[in-house]
Structures are given as structure tokens and as C-alpha cells.
Amino acid sequence: MASGIKLSYHKRLFLLLLAFSWSMIIFFAVFQYYREKQCKSEVLDAQLQIYNQHLLEDIGKEYDSLDVLNTREQPFEDLRITLIDFTGKVIYDNILSPDALNNHLKRPEISQALKYGSGHNISRHSDSDGRLYFYSATKGEYFIMRSAIPYNAPLKELLRADWAFLWAIFMFSILMSVIAYFATRRIGNTIERLNQFAAKAERGESFDETESFPHDELGSISQHIVKLYTHKRQLTNNLNHELKTPVASIQVCLETLLSGIELSEEKRQELIGRCYANTERLRRLLSDVSLITRMEDGSQLIDSEEVVVNIILSEISDELEALSDEQYMKLHLDIKERIVVYGNPSLISSIFRNLTENALAYSGGKNIYITLLSHEQGFYRISFEDDGCGVEEDKLSRLFERFYRVDKGRSRQKGGTGLGLSIVKHAVLFHGGTISVSNRTNGGLKFVFTLPEALNR
Image 1 (cartoon, rainbow, N blue to C red):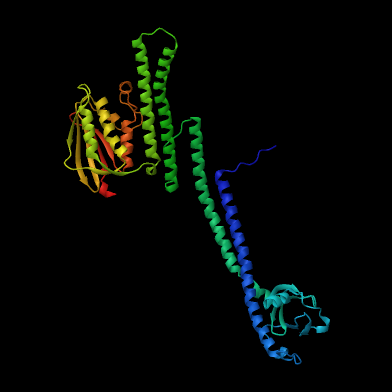
Image 2: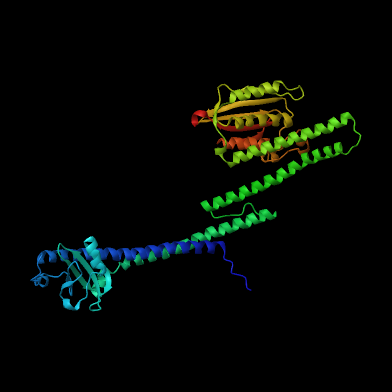
């Protein structure tokens, strides 16, 4: 059995849109056609109702002289006039003899007139002469007057809907269908490329992150999705790699402790200490990843308020004073005013603490310099410097990458997660600021970043 024809995403999208739009158009056109015809019928009925009312007024209560029904000028040619009493008996008809006509009580227009005072029937064959008529009946005080127009060419033309309007709708629909074809082709092709990209990513195959998309809003969104997908995959791969080392170390230590081998108390404590240290490393790693994820997921998950940076720096200074001589770095503050920024207290604190921890662990210097460079246009511009060894120029641009380490072995030995500077960058960008890093002329690193003033929000 031959397999069914598989349509592309573009064709499926186009056919679905076409079916929906044309269904709506046909429904509207049919509705408009019958609605317009009904409106014209109601206008015609209103004219005949007025004429019927005049005839009823002319004959009054008595109908001994019905010549007046023939003398009044008729609004339409070949108009048939019928006078009927409330029992349905035909008293007068200008076309046929009343004696030859059956009781009219059950005629639709007569039933309506008896019930509502007036009634009409757009198109009904006469049981008397077999012709097709437009009927209009009016109930008077004593009789029912019915007038009927033969359903001939002039009447059909009068009741015909405005085809010019329907043709305009049809041509407009054709134009919109053509536009929809090209629009859905572009959308469909872009989505198919994104699906191919996702399929490759799920299979672990290589792909081009810089693949070009249309230079419009859809293309920008698509490119953003590709980059986001790439970053997520890189984060997953890096996180998997970073988790393996502490987990493997914990496993080795626990297997040794559970093996039954005779160990000295000192060795047992060493193994337990390694387990604890790697567990703490795992906790910090997961905490850092969670923090970055929260910042990427959006501001609605993170509360903001006024934060006094001077207080944070004072706490960091006290913590540095409590360190041993080997770890100690002196904090030099050059801030002449109270810095109040608008943001999340935890994230603002993480900017200064992660920069400080990075300097303590890797700079090899003895001094940290924090300076308020400027305060203008609603932003504070701050520099954070150390007098350490700095970083090779070709590696500066990668310092903010997740899990990037200048010296991998030394970084892991220090217990770092590789996410500290990435958190700093994300926290600054989250608050609408900018950040850059460079080597100092006389040694060490210099970070320059901006944070929003509280009064600016």
C-alpha cells in the first residue's frame, strides 16, 4: 500500500488557513445574500402593506360597492387584489371569481395577518392559478386585504442581491489568499528549519548556530530561539561535566569507607572531609545554576527594591578583615556618596561578593579597589580592581562564560563552580546595566559596570 502524501509545514499551514478563511467568507457571503434579499422583501412588503391599508379604508365596513378596489392606482403592474373575511372566505378577487377560490384561512400570509396584523410570503405558488407570487396581507377592522405581485422578471430583479458587493468580497478574498500563501510559506519554512535544528540538537548532531534567518521580526525571534537552544544545550553539557567530578570523588570515598578495609581514624576523617567538601561544591554549583536560570526566566520571578550598596561593601570589608594573613586582601573604597540602586538585594550583593571571591581565589594580589567613577543619567558607574596577576589578553573575552576557567586545575582546587563571573554579568544585565573587563596597566583585573539609581525607577 502506497504511503500517504506528506505535506510540508507550509502547505499544511496554508491549506488550514485557506479552509478556515474561505469557510468564513462563504458563510458571510451567503448570509449577506439572504439578508439583503430579506431586507428588500421587507421594503416591498411595507409598500404593499400601505396600499392594503388604503384599500381597507376605502371599502370601510360595507363591501356592496367594490369598484373602488379597481379604481385606486396600483403601485405595481399585474397586481392581484384579494379581499378575505376572518373565516378565510374570499369575498373579492380581481383576477379570479371568488366562487372558484377555496378557503384561504390556512394560507401562510393570511395566518400571519390574523395573528400579528400583517404577513407576507416571498415566493409561493398560488393554488388557484398556479402562478408564483409575492404575497402581502393586512388585517383591517373587518376584513383582510391581500395584494400579490407575480414573481416575474421585474420582481426578481427588484429582489436580487447586490452581486457587485459579493464580487468585491470574492476578489478581495482571492487577493488575501495569495498574500496568505507567501506569508505562510515564509513562516512554514522558518518553522521547518527550527524543527530541523531542534531534531539535530536532540540527536546530539552538530549544527550551525549562526545560520541565517530572514531580516525581520520573525527572523530575529528564530535566531534568538537558536541561540537560546544552543546556550541551554551548552549549559546542560557543561553542568553534566562539572557534576561528574564531585560525584565521582564522593563515590570513591564512600566505596573506600564501605569496603571494610582497615583505615586509621585520620584517614577516615580525611575521606569524610572530602565527601563533605564535594557535597558543598555540588550545593554551590546547583545554587549558582538556579540563580542564573531565574535571571534568564524573567524579572517576574525576582523582586526588586531600593538597595544601599554602601552597606554591602561595609559587610564585605568586615569579612575580609576576619580572614587569615594568607588569604587577606585589603579593600580600598573611593566612594564619596551614598549609593542607592534599584534592584534585587541578593543579586546586587552577588555582584560585589563574586568579584571579591574571584580576586581572593585567583588574582594573587593583596589589594582590592572599588571606585565610584560617575553618577549621571540615572546610573552609577563603578569600577572593581585588584592588583593581582591579571589574565592573558586572548582569554579576557571568555571570563564571563559559564564554567570557563583560566586554570582549570587550580580553579577546582579552590572549590569554585566556574559560574561566579557569569552570575556577575547576568546580574548586571538583569538590572539594565553594562559590564566590561580589562587588564590594569600595573597588573590585575579591572571590571567596570553600571547599576540603575533608585530614583530612576
